[in-house]
Image (cartoon, rainbow, N blue to C red; front, side, top):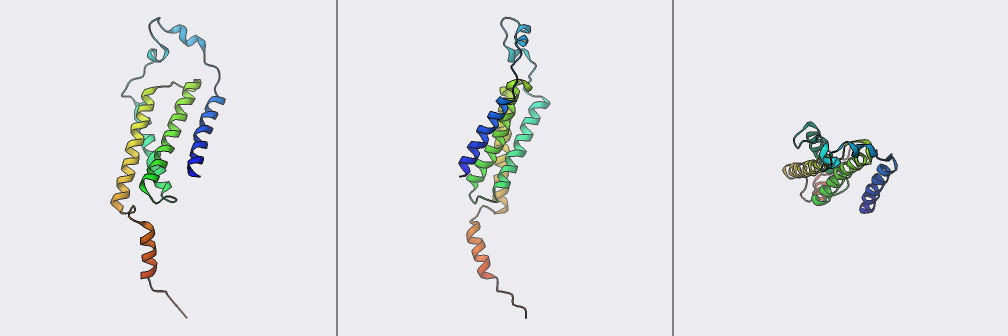
Length: 154
């Protein structure tokens, strides 16, 4: 059921991005020199403020998705998958909107989205290991209920 929901979210976000897209301006290709493509003519440095934002926001989204999914999933790989899917879905949607004409699409932005997602999920997993929340939560809950004597006040 969760897999279907994520698949629907990905398809839905791509559909929204393309439905909102106006036709791309043909005049942009006239400003390029003959040997230069449209993506090469724009100034898109590897180390800029935009790349830092893509990296940081993707990392925060991935960690947030990991942490939020811990309410529903007990296994770390499931939480990591949800966190990564959440961050990458939003990152890909943003690049599709840019590609549709609302911004400047860049494969470099997507690479920084991937790197930020990987770091965010990794840090969330390490925090999970350090706090010990990944170790058999169901057995701990049952054992804790057995160890606590019932409180009767009359």
